[in-house]
Image (cartoon, rainbow, N blue to C red; front, side, top):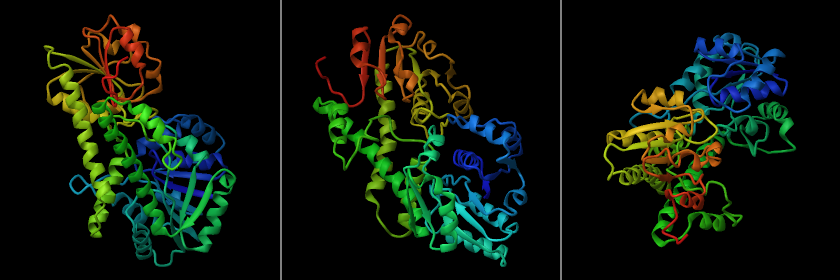
Length: 437
């Protein structure tokens, strides 16, 4: 099958490489010529575990190619996937659809024979109808169907998730498109449930999924606050709660709030759509407000821990919104750092993959180091803000004599609390009260 993919970001590129690995002929399209030239050399512009190796293999076997020409990517394609960004509007927070609409309008003139247009960008409900209208207006003779294929790739695990999907959702009422998409996803039929739903239902599923997970994170963060007050242990509570099969263990880890390119954007967009339709999504609204408050409260806790120190130096472990990615967009760590900078605090930070992206956002307002231990040199407080696996093996004895004040605030539960206290650190984390050790 010949497949064109518009967009080479965190969704488009893993999808394109994955489909190429399955044997399809894939052409990825992007307006940014410098990015296309980079990809042609087998290099990716963001960190995604295992992706670069797959890209190089499929460049060598000719299954994937890259172009800045919409005509080259779309002409003769059986399937065209739209995977462009839908960033939040700076004021209303609704999804900005200019990239999706632009892609649909431009591709219309190059459709050649029957083509399925699949929207993989996260878009407001009804966008499929808009794309249909835009294409039909630009090219009244085009033979096409528009479907919704919501993506469920986790950043940092996109390659794994592509080949091991927990579900495949296809939004279409067209039998012709359904038969072709059944063929496309045939390699996954033994390992994943594939369901066909109405296009508008498919568009809703992505928002509903992300909003529910955001609410789950907000819930466990509120329970962590409760546990601190009543001298309970949130990790024991979460373990007990997660044993209920109706709830499950995932997303029950307290932290400084949710972030990234999906949860903040999608909860805001869903809330905006609800207001447009005169519906109150009270849980979503509370989750959005609570998550913003959460980050502010963590900032206040950090500031309170160094308020007695003159010109305190704060060491930060983690800048990305989660481990396994270099993405700093909407990262709680970044928002907290902004608060600390407003309080004129001196900050030094380390992250395994996110320093370059953090620099693009923060500039030189903080100090960056390339070693997870040197970050603690002469620091008065060490704060963990991202749950990178390499932090779990952090040797606290290595920094015991490097810090001016042996003070740790672990917001991700990556350190051994008892070991830290044994080594003489003043240690605090989230969701644990003043329990006698």
